[in-house]
Length: 274
Image (cartoon, rainbow, N blue to C red):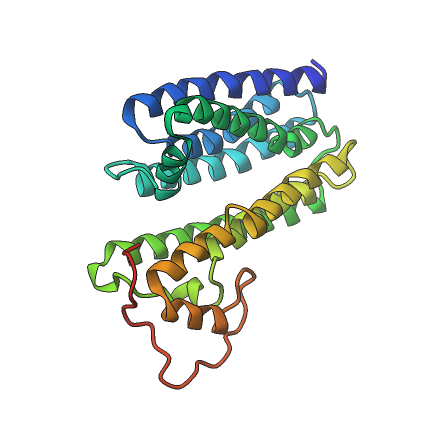
């Protein structure tokens, strides 16, 4: 089976999966299931490519294991942290209000765009799975980068979840652990994760295609739905405390903090709760 056929089948699978999830959100009233589907779908596509791509068996096993573990962890985290037992996220509530009577039609289109995006983002997995060369030095460097990225993101997610679950932290700013050195360590390590497949595929035919995913992730995290949207909400809910956090702490790449201003604290600011 050639690469084009595999990509088309993968896209078709994601289209069907997102249609089913759209029906789920219609019944449950929570569009956040799209995030679970997007993440889980990438893991499924990686395993699909590993089975049918026809490259070196070790390369195929490696991509299935790396993406499978990453996908399973992140999909479970998104479901448990944002969906199970919780109301729909504010960003999706805002979209429903904005779209009004056309909300369901536009959500269907939104879900399908997410499915197409997952098919595009899965191209690095296909490049790896079709690589005929055995594992080499770049493969093990990639594994090391993957381990740092997945462990780092999981740690940042746990720290944020614990902070949000503590009633005494309501309205304050998380400045402990990894969040002391980056305002968005979870985003940074997610971005780093995508470079795993660029490194692992060095020298493979079509290697350039692995650069597509880090480019897309960088654009959305840095310019669209990641840092800009998150920080707008944080400024509304935490005010001056978050402004001081912005001044002292790196936005993305973990780095040493700047000195805090005298009398600048992270106490409870005015504004709606997070």
